[in-house]
Length: 255
Image 1 (cartoon, rainbow, N blue to C red):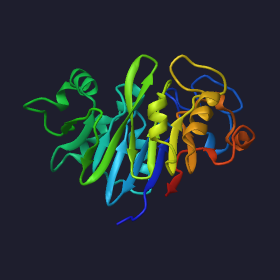
Image 2: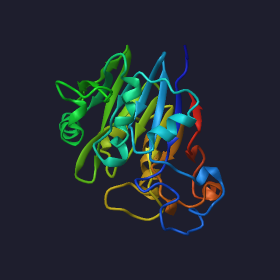
Image 3: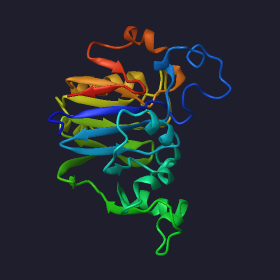
Image 4: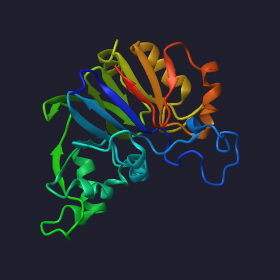
């Protein structure tokens, strides 16, 4: 059993992925594997439990190249396609029993409409089947591991990040309240979204993300959910203060 927390970044890209279709910018054409970003997702391994955070359209590819493909549950941050489109591919984890799925009520309601065959009383043989767990603002346990929801806003959509032991994981946030930032102060490892250099309606971009990081003062921070407009990975140290790095697909961090 791991005595430390381990996070494996399955994907670190925004909804279009990098390279983006029909784009010939230097990042999309880069041969550096760190510039190849599948849609954002991660596995957190802690106290013997393996938690998948989000399950996007690249899930199958991500798990085929992951260091370990065992999973115990999935935590969903919100309902957007790039975070839930791979749920059907969890069917191979459901052969013996329904797979535990933790999500907000609005996310579960939406999934019932999008993939109703997974929630039918008489499901077609072989489909993914889920053991639904409704989460709110209160901490909950997954096989004995304490998970604390982190409330953030994705433009006008309320979504959640997760605090798991020494890790705080936030994706797709545009605004984070001062109270939430204060509660995260000093977290050993902060994983947080940063779409690009510039501005965006519904995602924090680099200046906003670095401001949040400066208020939290984590032991170390990794940026995720990045587009090609974040620039080349190799040149990112010029943009980032000490203790902040761009994550990349396949990176494993232990704390």
